[in-house]
Image (tube, rainbow, N blue to C red):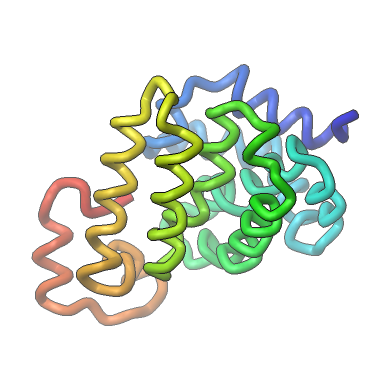
Length: 187
């Protein structure tokens, strides 16, 4: 049985919202998410939802809160990335527990996103292997693969995402600034 709050997150993300909505900037969508789930996010960062890791569906909801929704709540703010490390630990534990065998393809995709959001190349390499294994039959596999490839280009080239530099207080190099003028360089 899935927790009521986790179910609300899962239903909103996978039933009530179109996939494309998650991958574009939309201030009104961000506000809606903030209103619906910000209290859950605060509980999650205070470890009140850690037991959600014990169930595959609830684990997806926890990852959504800490990874995807944090980016909506705190767009253009360093807080968007504050939970990335914790989230990657949760994802690795979920993989070890065999959750990728239990979930549908769309939930697997969102469960794996923290690996591609990481600025650690080893997470990208691992993530690409998992995408090729678990999402190769996904209806949008080619689109997912291209997006992941685009992300990895930045990490291989710079060891970080240049589009985060300003909000994280990092100085951009000239090469990074030139990169940011190209398509598929900011997410």
